[in-house]
Image (cartoon, rainbow, N blue to C red; front, side):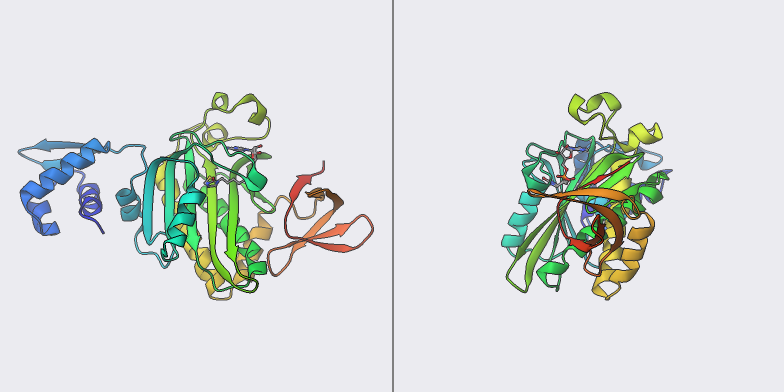
Length: 325
Ligand code: BT5
């Protein structure tokens, strides 16, 4: 843990204040070094009061994503969140994570950006990602699985994301196969899984997650107002992005551990119980092909099993699903 993260933790643990001398002893650095780090934290938006009687006291925290802060909130993890990077602005966090992957970074690296200039969805679609209104981040994984099983990772991400949204906000979101999280039928989050693989072996997978947190209804452009929403719009209050990010990373780490332990079926069961797609009549567009049918189940590898109008069972591994009324 970095010195900054240790200072943040120590300040949080002592709301009445902690002296510079005590911090210096705890951290094994000089009092001048403590002072310099406190100045840096102030510049990053932390409000730290200093006084002769109480030492240093934390009076306010920024709504900014700060790698050290996230790291200190996260606590011990198995894989996801081992290393966290936060960028102010980038084209797409999936591209940054891809670069980390090519440079040999280990799995579990997470890359956040406060805003993305070219955030993307599937099939080159645009993903709106303005500054500080949401969480825009990507994970690098190096799973030991064949390429055809990687839909499991999208199922994992959706399951973990739904659970974390519920634990952090109390909102009960639904999952639409394969990559949408919905509240009241509108999209609150999306997942973009990108794969680098040989024929029978995955090299690495980048999972990008976009979550609309503090958008007001008017912040959405007209073309998204009917289909998109945010946690703030649905709950009527703003949410701490750092708290939510922490809950999501912890849930992802726990579910990735379940998958590595061969327990995908437990993740799939949780997915199924919160799914907006199963049991519904749906239309699936895959390229030029359109299939109508009833969504029956999730297959072992994460594919959607669809009973077509003609009674055949079709395995759907990609495409756009529209729920029919
Ligand atoms: C997705 O694609 O839902 C995947 C979105 C993944 C975004 C994350 S952010 C971090 C990482 N870095 C990236 O560059 N991407 C990932 P898809 O199912 O194709 O949905 C895209 C469609 O959703 C667009 O065509 C719009 O109609 C709509 N959309 C765009 N921005 C949105 C937003 N912020 N909220 C809700 N809907 C949105």
